Structures are given as structure tokens and as C-alpha cells.
Length: 325
Ligand SMILES: NC(=O)C1=CN([C@@H]2O[C@H](COP(=O)(O)OP(=O)(O)OC[C@H]3O[C@@H](n4cnc5c(N)ncnc54)[C@H](OP(=O)(O)O)[C@@H]3O)[C@@H](O)[C@H]2O)C=CC1
Ligand SMILES: CC(=O)N[C@@H](CCC(=O)OP(=O)(O)O)C(=O)O
Image: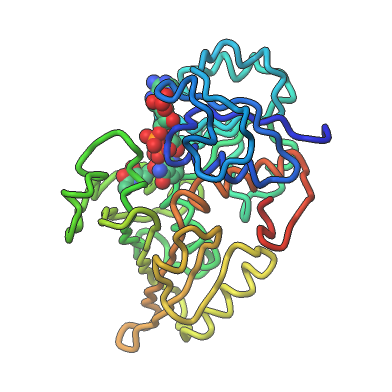
């Protein structure tokens, strides 16, 4: 590994792109050498991203074909869904040691790419070259369900459900009802109640069918999930909580609490919090619990940086960002 990892970002104007810029700026082992945005082309990054330390870095327009000549160590692709998949040839043509991390949904079902959920797929990420970052809700749902997989009833008897509420940054910057603060004020919108990509993603990754009902609310960032499922034995809330604590004890970003987590605890935080375990007294095995995470951080940029660190064996850790930088 070179002294400094040479990194670039495609989609650097977007909500996720800006988070990546800030995280990589703070990363002691990374030098951000190129950021691409059509709308900001020619503008210095420090004028757009508050606190950005490098006065020289300028947004460029992304001529994708030039990327192969840049001898990058890592390229973060934070483009809207459907764009990264159009450039399969380019990803293959990039230098063989350039790591590509796609934050869109385009490669999450592609066996040629490693699924980049760092807490559960760490071994496969070491030395990986093509990484598909998980979806934001999908991160929360799979980490919330994984410790219980061997206790869940088979799908023909019960299907776990997830009721999710996201902040409107989850819908990106292209204007729509889902990111229109006027439309969302004092409001809650349900959308895609069946067949959401993240329902398919979690069912695929866990090899266990789930159901997901997403909603969007007026806050900017943060996902709140209420999960419900039926276990094949009767456990107390305390026993379930201990099971989660044991499962995630080696993973500093996953917090397990007794109380139900709240959006305000995770907004602008790298942590994902699981808690609020409630076991029915009238229906043995019926369990309801909650997961919260910041969609832009643990649901996107933080997870991408964790993946880079694992793939490129970056061992540096600081107290403030233990497990990420
Ligand atoms: N928002 C979230 O919470 C999460 C998002 N993701 C995924 O991450 C990706 C980025 O999301 P997000 O930041 O929210 O999206 P945004 O809509 O906020 O940003 C999109 C970015 O892509 C660029 N872009 C758009 N169209 C094109 C194009 N045709 N060619 C080149 N560049 C283009 C835009 O810059 P410009 O127009 O200036 O070129 C901008 O930088 C998406 O795939 C999303 O699904 C994943 C997890 C969570
Ligand atoms: C509120 C909102 O719209 N959220 C988005 C989150 C998905 C996302 O951003 O991730 P991928 O497209 O990369 O899977 C949605 O439900 O589509």
C-alpha cells in the first residue's frame, strides 16, 4: 500500500458524495485527488463543502473514460442507481489494483462484486477489488435480523416485517415528493409498500424472506426501523438483548441498548443502534424491536470507508473514529 491512498469520487455533489468528501478529508491515510460533479465543475471544493481542508481541489466533470489513466487506489461511485452498471467495461479496464466501491444498488446482486457489509462479510472484503455497498435501510434490517436468523420461524410459518421511516436525504437530490420539505412538513409519506429493492436485498443476503414497508418523514437524515418477527422458542427481552450484545461485541459501530433507539441518537453518527426489545406475553415467540442508523453515514459513506479500510488493509484507527478511519 502506498503511503497515502489516492482516492476519487464520482457523484461528489450528492448527499452521499459530500459525506464521503468529509470522511476522506479526515482520514489520515487518504489523499482525495479528484472529485466529479457536472453542476459544480470548476468550483473549489472548500467553497462548497464546509470545513474542507484542501484549498486546491476543484470539482471536475466526470469523463468516465479518463478514470482508467489516473492510477487511483480507490474510486467511490456515488451516482444515482442505473449509471454504474452501464460502465462494466470501464470497471474491468481500470488498473487491476484500483478498488471500486459502488454505493448504488447496481451491483448488490452481482456475484462478480463483493457485498460490502463490513460487520458480516469481513473475510470476503479483504483484498476485494469490486465492492457493492449495501442499501441504507438494508443495512439496518440485516444487522437487526442477523443475530436471530437461527431462531426465526421458517418463512412458510412467519415472515419478519420491517416498518421503516427515513429522513428525506435518503431520496437524494433529484426533486420529488420524497425530498420536498414543504410536502413533508408535519407529514409522513408511505411509498413502495411491496417489492422495494432493499426488501429483495435483505431477503437475498440473509437467505430468509422479509417484508419491508418504507416511509419518508420531514427530518433530514436518519432511519428508524421497527422490526417484528416470530421466534421458534420463547425468550425474554433481556435474553434477546444479551444475544445481540454477544453477536456484535467485536464491532464498535453496532450498539445494543435496552431502550428503543431514536433518530436523534444516530443523526451525524457512525453508529447503528439496536434496542427496544419487546416480547409478547400473550403470543410466545412474538418479538418486536428497533434499529436506527444515519442513512448517509452507516447506511452509505461510513460503510464505504470501512470497506475501503478492509479491502486495502488500512489498519489505522483513531479514538474518535474507531473502526472507520
Ligand atoms: N441518500 C442516501 O441516503 C443513500 C444513497 N445511496 C445511493 O448512493 C448514490 C448517491 O446517492 P445520493 O448522494 O443520495 O444522490 P444525489 O441525488 O444526492 O446525488 C447524485 C450525484 O450523482 C451526480 N449525477 C447525477 N446524474 C449524473 C449523471 N448522469 N452523470 C454523472 N453524474 C451524475 C450528481 O452530480 P452532478 O449532477 O453535479 O453531476 C450528484 O453528485 C445513489 O445510488 C443512492 O441510491 C445509498 C445509500 C444511502
Ligand atoms: C427516502 C428514500 O427514498 N430512500 C431511498 C433509499 C434508497 C437508497 O438511497 O439506496 P439505493 O437506491 O442505493 O438502494 C429509497 O427508498 O429508494
